Length: 340
Image 1 (cartoon, rainbow, N blue to C red):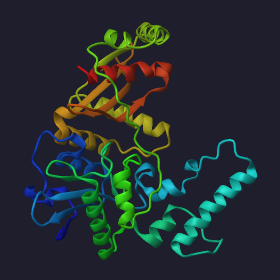
Image 2 (image 1 turned 120 degrees about the vertical axis):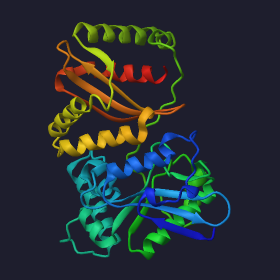
Image 3 (image 1 turned 90 degrees about the horizontal axis):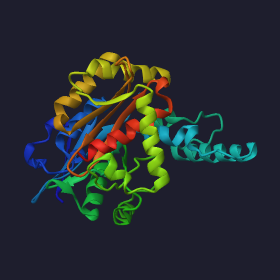
Image 4 (image 1 turned 30 degrees about the vertical axis):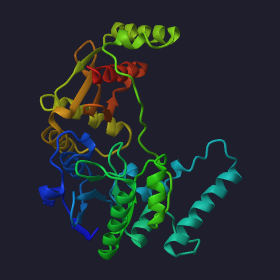
């Protein structure tokens, strides 16, 4: 590997360095990375190898203080909700906080107890996080249109950290499946240290042609419960619909805005609308939107997902409070549509 080139936008990467194949998983595609640029905002990066053979590429985004909780490794590390304090005594909780705070202070070279421990401290002392993450292809190191071998991926990610250090850009965080021991071992060999954070949950589901086909494969008690819940869903006046993200964007964004406000998250309706339209523009036929309407036709729940030939990836879900326990029916309906 002769070296790498650094780009601050996917659009700046020459086509020859990013495979134009159309059969790659959608979250490894160039257009999905362009969509993530719109979502993440701020600065993006792509490193591409120089030299003979297919280009090897790693791409992601650079965090800032404004980056969302689940997109910022510093915040995942420092936020108290990830310390798993359930059922601990007050003394034990104090010990957990103390160990976390001590580790952070040692990391930034400040042992003073008066130093507040939060993600801002890590951003100030160590710089931003360069997050390399796909959807279920977590390391997102691609070459010739597919995921590359562990050894090559580790070399590219090591080159990324080197290039980031040269630019004082921050610390590289590739999200890697802990079960991929070959890649984890290869990254250890290049100097990376492994940690664990909240991640995507992946299910392998058999294909089915209809809900009845699915229910034939489950235990009788589960089959009865599903049928009853479908009946309750309909009896409450709810109906399931496939929506058009472009045609129904304002109604979908209105529901999304209400959900954000409900959970104490800032909601910029104009930005959300532009984000959903960018999703349509860049991902097109890979988008699926399922919604539930009440008896008056009001949209009360909605899920936005991306699909390709073999996978169905849930991106966004929200509901009004009055949908209550019926939300499970929407989830099953979304999975059923994935097989059609």
